[in-house]
Length: 196
Image (cartoon, rainbow, N blue to C red; front, top):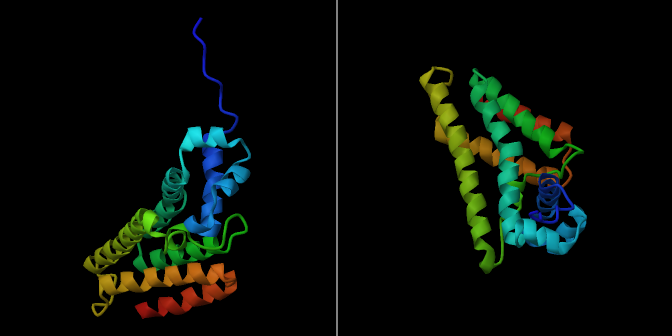
């Protein structure tokens, strides 16, 4: 009879989700392997066997965050027919995320690896690439709206994308510093005036 390997003492997806919340709150440099191990709640050898080192875990965490958070925001932006409504819904969704009691009050992609030591620059560059792709999604949404005649002719899709993504990044930092949902909603309300 063939022997089977010893089963893992934890659920891999649940463990990765716990690691995601640590990186989300503290960033790449601020997170230690001991904190990850403690959050997951199992022995270090099992975690290293399942995920590898801190760098490997972080890459998986970023991909999980993209799936669970960012892609949903992009769907909202692209699937709402009216571009002004799409923008408002997307901004309000970010405010809800940034101020939710269920997760850290910031954005992992925006803040987790703005700076890193020289040996970990790949994380800085990877998140920078993701942020650029995020901005390109906003640009393409505004380009489509312009083609459909939904935007004032004076409004430039690239400039709008720059403006709203900068706003989202700023709100992520403001929320981390303690800005409330009410305050951030006032910010988005003011930002929407650019369309009029």
